[in-house]
Image (cartoon, rainbow, N blue to C red):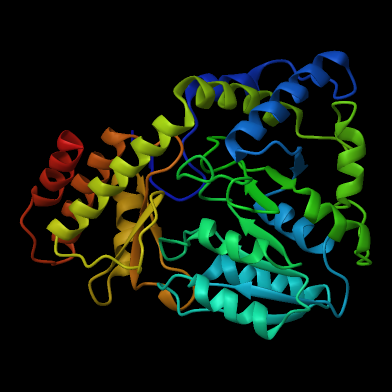
Length: 377
C-alpha cells in the first residue's frame, strides 16, 4: 500500500470535513435549501477575495473565469495590455487574441516579475488600452507580482485592471478592493481546498462600465446572466451542487482560521521550503518568490526523473517545469490543505530520490533546514 502526498500547485489535498460534504445526498439547485447555501458561499467568497462586490461562481476551471474576464470586457479590435511572467500570464495573451483583441505585451522573461514602472510606461504609450491583465502568483515559475503597486498605477487611467488570482487566493495576502483590482478571478482546487470544477470572478463598478460596452459574442460566460441570477441566490445554469456544498464547508474552515493567520502559516511554509532547497544545494528559481509554491533549479538532465520517481516510488507528487522550463525546475507547493508534516515528508523523499539519481547530497540536511525554519518561525 502506498500513501499519496500532494505537494502540487493544484489540485491540493482536501480536508476530510470538506470531502465528506460531497458524499451527502444531492440537492436540487432550484430550492430554498440550495439558495441558502449559495448565499452563504457568496458571502464567504467576498471575505476571501477581500471585496464588497459580488463574487460569481462559474462551473469550470479557473480558465473559465479568465475567459469570462476577457469576453465580458473587450470587443474585437480593442487594445489590451498583458503583463506576463510565465505560463499563466501567457494564457491571458492567448484568450485575448482568440477574441480578436489587439494585445500589447508588456511581458518579462520567465522567472522575472512584472515591474510596475513598465506597466506605467505601457499605459502612457497606449492611453487607449481598455484593460491591463496580469497574474498574482505565477506558479509556473514561483514568483509573485506587486499587484498593489500595479493597481495604484492602473487606477489613475481608464483601463480596467484584471488579475489572475487562481493560485494565490487564500495562500498569500491579496486584497481586491484595497489594491484597486477591478476584476479578480480564481479557482476551487488550490487555496480553497476543493476538487477542480469551480471558478470565481468579481467585478468593480469600473469593470461593469466596461462590461456594458463589450460587443464580444458570449452566452455561457455572459457575466450579466450571473449577476441577474445572483440577485435570487441562484446560478444561471446548472451548478456542480456537491462542489458548492463542499465549498461552504471549506469557507467555514477558512473563516474560522482567519485569512491573516493562514497568510502567516503559508509564509512560514514557504520559508521552510526555500531553506530545504538551499540546504540540498538546489538554487532557487524566480526573482521574487511567492508564498504558495517554491521553485528550484533541478540538477542537469534529471528534473523529469525527480518528479516521476517521487510520484511512482514514494507517492509524493510535486510539479516540474512547464514550457521552456520543462525538466529544468522542480516545484514544491505549500498551499491549501498542505501542512508542515507534508513538507517534511516531501523533503525526506526528495533526498532519497536525489541520492538514487546520483546527486551528491548530505542526507537529512534538507529536512533539518526545513525543520529549523519551522521551529524558529
